[in-house]
Length: 120
Image (cartoon, rainbow, N blue to C red; front, side):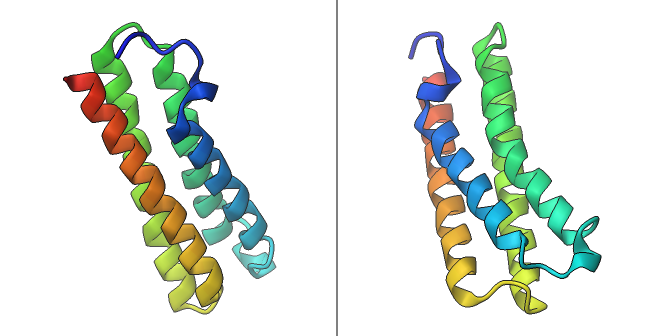
């Protein structure tokens, strides 16, 4: 795979962006006392995924890009973990939990594929 010219052309970035949009919409229903707690942390983790893909795409080496993709993968797992907690305490209904989890699974697959293709 050659140099990435535009992060916006990456499916992983586009799917991560959609995940962030869903997280923002769903967390609007969280209790106000969670604004600086779970709501903020879940939103920041979701935004971190696409942000790290974008930042890594302009790094000078493939190794650097893979490092940022690894960070994005970690943030993706954080969204999954926080979503489980949100469901456990009754902030996320089953439908929204499944949507977020499914999107996270898809983003993870895309990040893994992109990383594999860069390392080969």
